[in-house]
Length: 119
Figure 1 (cartoon, one colour):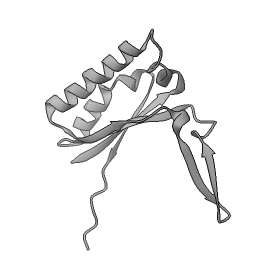
Figure 2 (tube, one colour; figure 1 turned 180 degrees about the vertical axis):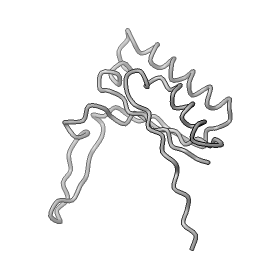
Figure 3 (cartoon, one colour; figure 1 turned 135 degrees about the vertical axis):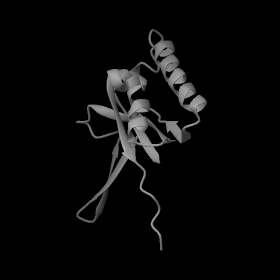
């Protein structure tokens, strides 16, 4: 079964990516985690995302498109990236989620992939 691991990171945690004092530790933890996922052969695909300030949000209100730079200002966590993994069951997906580097400073959401609809 396929599950998406959705990594929500706090703003100060995302900032570690570019901080010379913390970048090596930050990226090292992610590289080790991604290496483990790959070595186990469970990765279908996945990507990290650029920092939240590069985002553009779009919504339609009363039929008019509204565009806002960045994520919504009241957000305390931001989408940092995701992986789609293929594992036997939810317990296995939760095990992988619990090993992600951001579980100590953010959230890893686990969500089953919706299978394609049969015509």
